[in-house]
Structures are given as C-alpha cells and as structure tokens.
Image (cartoon, rainbow, N blue to C red; front, side, top):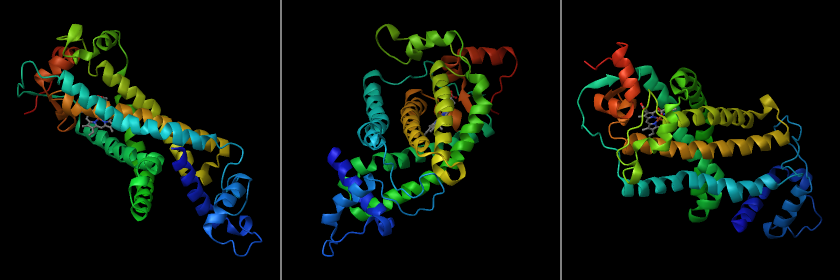
Amino acid sequence: MNNLFKRFSVILALVVATVFAPVSMAHDDATDHTHAATEGQIWAQLKAGATGETTSHGQFHNQPINTYDLRVLELRSDLLAPALMAALFGMIIIFVVFIKINGISKLHGGFSGKMVYRWSKFDVSIHWLGAIPCLLLILTGLTLLAGRFFFQPYIGEGFWAALVYGAKQVHDIMAIPFMIGWALMTLLWAKNQLPKMYDLKWMMVVGGYINFGPFKGKHPDAGFANAGEKLWFWAFAVFGLVISASGMLLLFPNLFEPSRTLSLIALILHSVSAIIITAFSIVHIFMATVMSEGGMECMVSGYCDENWASQHHNLWFDEIKENGTLKYKD
Ligand code: HEM
C-alpha cells in the first residue's frame, strides 16, 4: 500500500509540477531533463511549498499541495480507501454467507394476491431519483478514492486514465439528482420513521429475520417502517446531509472559498459518510431484493402483498384496516 501510495504521489507530483513548471522546475543541470532524476526533486519542492498559478480564487490558490499537514493523504490510502472497499465488497460477502447459512424470510402464508397500497407513485419516483444516482456515486466514488490502490495496478494505463476521468464526470453530475432525491425523501418520509418503544423489541430479535436459535419464528411488532428501516432512514438523512454539504464545498471551491483546512475536513467527512451510506445501502438492497420475500414490489408498483403487510408491518396493517385507509389494487 505504501509503495503504491508513493508511486501515486510521484505521478501526482509530476502532473501538478507540469502545471507549476515556471516557478518550481528551474534547475541548473541542463542534461537532467529525464523524469528519473527530477521525480524526487519535484516532490521535495512541492512539499517545500513551491508556488505557481491555478484557476482557484482560494487562500492558497498558488500552491498545489498543503505543505503543513500531509496526514490526510495517508489517512485516505491506509484507512478510508480500504474501509470503502470493505463497506461495499465486505458487506456483499457477509450477506451472501449469511443468506447461505440462514436462508431468507419467506411469507408464511405465501402470496395472497391481494395488493395493498403502501407508497404513492411520487414516493416510488423520488426513491429511484435518489437511489440510482446513489449507486452510481458509490461506484464512481470508490474508483476515485480506492481505485489507484486496488484497480490501477491491474489495468492498463490508458484504461485507468479513461476510467478515472469518466468516474469524476459521472460523480460530479450524479451529485445533483442524488441531493434532490435525498431532500425529498428526508422531508416527506420522516414522519413515518420516528422511533417507537416497540422498535427496541424488533432490534432485540433482529426483526425475526434469524431462522435459528432463540430468534427462530419471532414476529416483532412493526409500524409503517420497522426499526431496521428507521435506522437506515436516519443514517441516510444524517450522512446524506453531511455528504451533500461536504461535496458542495469540494465541487464549488470558488463559490464557497473554503480554507485549506476546511477542504481537508470536508474531504474526510465526505469519505466517512460514503463508507457509512455504502455499508447501509448494501444491507438495504439485500433486504429489499433477496431477504424479504415480496418486499421489492413496494418500490416497483407502490403496493405490497397483504400477507407481506401483516407479517412484516402488522401494526401499520391493523391501523389502516381500522381507520379505513386500507386501499387494494383494482
Ligand atoms: C437496487 C437498489 C435498491 C432497491 C431494490 C431498493 C428497494 C427499496 C424498497 C423495496 C423499499 C421499501 C421498503 C418498504 O416498503 O418497507 C425501499 C425504501 C427505501 N429506500 Fe431503497 N432500494 C434500493 C436502493 C436505495 C438506495 C441506494 C437508497 C439511498 C439513496 C435507498 C433509500 C431508501 C430509503 C431511505 C427508503 C425508506 C426506508 C425504508 O423503507 O427502508 N434505496 N427501498
């Protein structure tokens, strides 16, 4: 990892130094124009605070790297990048193994065929407005943060350059629909996601999803959202805010003119939030598509099977039956 990081640092230094050449690259030895001799010098000069010109208007607009604290580079290569890989691939492996051992949550009474109204068409649309960009942001973010350590050594230079360039463009563009989806979901759905006392019991028996030991056959109470969904919702609400705010700061430095320290803090907060959202997303996707038989239909048609409603969201189902808002699909 350290070697890879050093190699990247040298490449980064070379690229930046080309831009900063007029101020930083002047040296006496006319024969020493080959990169081998200059790599170390370039990096040394950058670290010593070489200055030049950039399009930035920020406080340190003339300096390519932060010379007073390089710890964030190590943090990214040694901790944040591996953690994001683990949040994505590690969680997928854990879930595949878990499902192999535990099995999925079947509908005890099978599908009734009677479909109950759960989400409006607008709800389904805003879910996918946030979810599809979120998945693209995860994949492109992974390429930008962890790609040079985990992918670059195994692929050709040209392919890597195209990949990282494409990832950056997609990442910047997808930020906008993600934030709109995030804002709408957070504002419109929060009222159904407030914690209740019965959520504790749901947590204690892991929602009844464990098919062995003392947990087997448990059916904890749940309202419109169960405790697991509430946890995901609030993690998404909080870290969606952090990732959006830090992302805007990084995307529009000329607008917000953050100090260099604030930019570094934003970069760290952005990565940490991405790690948390990625891990939760994988759990959420597995729960919706594989683990909970019949669950996926909710975000396709907005309706769920009556047996799914009474098995997984009994309190909500009882409530809509009682208050007369239960609506079946024609
Ligand atoms: C292939 C990917 C995904 C699938 C199949 C999926 C599916 C679903 C389903 C079926 C529900 C409704 C659950 C219910 O009615 O009880 C739901 C809810 C939700 N989804 Fe997704 N989703 C996906 C990706 C995402 C992503 C990436 C995000 C983040 C932007 C997200 C955010 C939410 C939120 C906040 C809720 C409401 C809380 C909840 O019910 O869990 N989803 N999703």
